[in-house]
Image 1 (cartoon, rainbow, N blue to C red):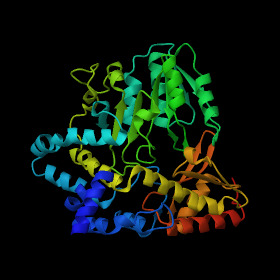
Image 2 (cartoon, one colour):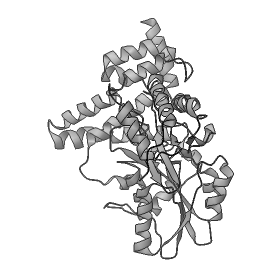
Image 3 (cartoon, one colour):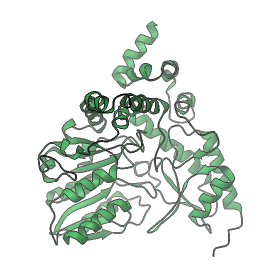
Image 4 (cartoon, rainbow, N blue to C red):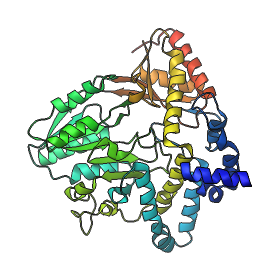
Length: 430
C-alpha cells in the first residue's frame, strides 16, 4: 500500500492522469498500478505496451493498420461513453443539460492543457471538417482575395475553399507538393513564393494524410503574419500523434479530430483560434453574438451527443498515462520496425520521408507493378491486414498506420505479406 501511494504521488506529478482509472475500471486500474513502472524504451520492452494492447478491444481476426482513418477507443473510453449515454436516457433533458453539460468547462480546460493554450481559445466540436469549415466560411473575404493551399490537402477542405471561390469570387492559388520531401526549407519556399499582395489566407495541412508527410508550419505562418496573411492549420492527424503544443505552430487557427490519435469517441474534435482572432470569424451556426469574442459561439450546435463529448476527458486521461513524447517515440518505432525490414526489397518503395522530424506513425507503401488497390486487397484477403489504398494527385500507395496497441507480431505478419507480394509475378493490369 505504501508503494502504491508513493507511485500515485509520483504519477500525479509526471502525468496527472490516473485518477480516472479506479472509477472507470478497477481491474484496469490494478493492471496500471502493477505494470506502469516497467515503462522503458519505446521498442523491444513490450511489457508496458502489452498492457496498453490489453486496454483495447482488439479484433482477434483482423489486424487493423488503418488507424490513420479513425482510431478505436480503449475500453475505459468506451465504458465512459456507454455510462454517460445510459445516464442520459434515464431523463434526457435533465441529465444532458443540467448534469453532463456542467462538465463542458472542465473538459475545455483539459483540452486546453493538452493543446498548451488558454481554455478561452478552444471550442469543442465534432471533427476537423467542422472546425476548419467554421473558419473557412467565417472569415471576411471578398472577390479577388487570394488563398494559398495545396493539391495534396484533404478533400473536405479543398471543397470548402472551392465553394467560397464559387460563391464569393475569391482566388485559389495552388501549390503542388512533390512528396516525400526531406527538405523543410523547400516546402516553406513553395508556400511563401505563392504569396502576393492579394493573399489573405494560407491553408497548411500539418500532416498530409495520404502519405504521412509532416509539414511544420512555423516559418510559413511567421512570414504570413509579417505580410498580414492569416494562417490556418489542418491538424486532423497530429494532435496526440506526436509531441507539440498548438501555440508553437504560430498559426492563427487550428482544428483536430479527437477520434483519430487521441482515441476519443467517434465524432469528436476541437477548434483552436488565437484569442485576438476570434472576433474575425463569424459563427458557422446561429449564435446570439456571431461576431463576438467568445470561443463558445462556435458550439451552438443544439442537441448533440453529450455522452460522447464527456467521454473525451477519459481519452485525454488515457493519453496522459502514456505521455505525448513516449507515444510519439513508440509510434515512430513501430513504423520503422516494419519499414526497415522491407525497404531494401527490389520493387518496394515508400512515399513518406525518412527524417524522424517529418514522419511518425504513417507509412505509404508502393510495390512496382502493383496498383495500390490490388496491394490492399491482397493484404486483406490473404493476411486479414486492413490498410487503405491511396490514389490522390501524385501520391499512389497503401497507407499503413499502426497505433499504440499494435504489437510486433502484427507487423511481422505485414513484413511477411510484403515480401510475398514483392516476390510474386505482377498482376495483369487491365
